Image 1: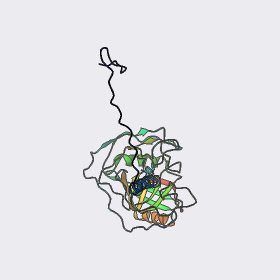
Image 2 (image 1 turned 120 degrees about the horizontal axis):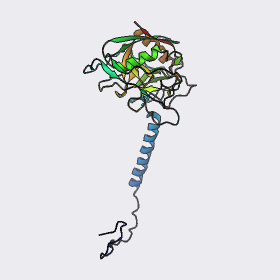
Image 3 (image 1 turned 135 degrees about the vertical axis):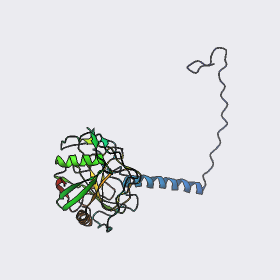
Image 4 (image 1 turned 45 degrees about the vertical axis):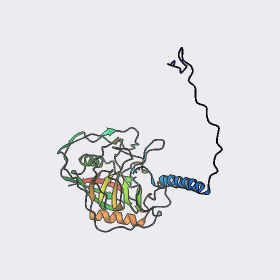
Length: 302
């Protein structure tokens, strides 16, 4: 047996390591092998560049110096065609997509809980929404009075009861009043306007987070209202996005309502004006809208 330090124990000969065979001169690489190695290196570099350009993690951006994502990010990024150049008008589909529905209704009521988040900038201090029971049936109306026109929303408690509680709480406290919609995407596969950040650059929130209310059958067609978040689960807060066109993203973002017809017309006008190339984006083809959208007043409606 050996001692704990690896030395041979009493009465034992040291372990005899086998002799290494004499070194064999390396074979000369063929032209085919060199070509394969070069091609592999090129593929790795292209994948790395693609990740940097398209893998912006989520809709919600983290403040400088913190890990995590933005729509998110994962804003989410588009999963289809490359980004349209900033300012290019979007091809906007007509009509309205069907709203997603839960395959099984939630318990009624459900229990909501909201978690303080000291790492999220909250220049506007607000009280946390009330923890406890919340109905998972019925709807609530909200009107976004914006500098570009009014946008009517119908919040659906059956889809996301706690998210509805959160949105109404922020609206009733005036949290959204005076904030701007900081991110427009007209890219094929990601056509939406993102709002609700009190900082205005994608890093802000209300000072707390809310739980995701998602399910695999979620889709994000024209007319859908959904919450933004980082790549981390349960990281949403106040940022939300309004879908006006083709949006193909994973079912990781809580859908909690729909946009009315006049509101979609407002979004169409904002989308057609395009992205402001004079302002910085986040590297995925999205950026501040050329037609500014400021939420002057957000109120619950009967």
